[in-house]
Length: 288
Image (cartoon, rainbow, N blue to C red; front, side, top):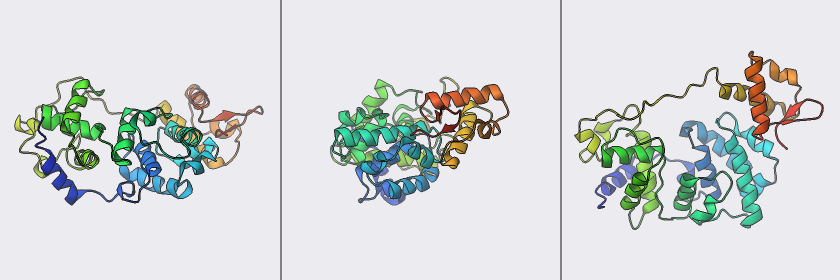
């Protein structure tokens, strides 16, 4: 498949790319891995200060691996989905135990690390090591879905057709820059709710725009709710544990959520997920 999108998108990226520390030449593979896990379902503005704090505290896998997992959870702050912090800690220990403290460059080996899926392994292999891989995050899938297939939104899960399209568009040289350029276009211009087609470098080629921007005809896309959910309850409980720097009595957790049934369910979930520990005296703490 000829990549007629490549030139315009790369030119646009050269003029409009955000200066993010994990994109700079001095970024380490570990720093890129940390950024990719933090950026999952989380915007750059929220990730940036936490990433900078993490890299100052744990600049290499050995530094994080030497700490208890609860410290990773504590310094994850309010990024959400805190199991990602446990995954990063487990990655650090696996890298130390199995890879001499170095983030592996091989896509398949990266995929075998704890909590690393297809997207993250492709992103790290590409952005950290220059590998030629299709990096398919939500932004990339949306850009290619609109420009190539004329669809407003991509399917809920990545399909074989999407993967084949992305792989066919990979340039022989410069695949990492191409991947991040498409990603940036989706983040800044070809956004989910308010795409700025007038500013798009490939608007004249975009099948979705040329077709009149037909609305999504698949299953309704439902926004995620947060207020009143178990996720919010878990976040409140975890905030108490993060701030305590030690074990806390049960009543210190009880006061942060009124619904006792939901509160107990959320607390049990934190313990089951390894994000909290209950001690013999009935107090709770972050995992050690």
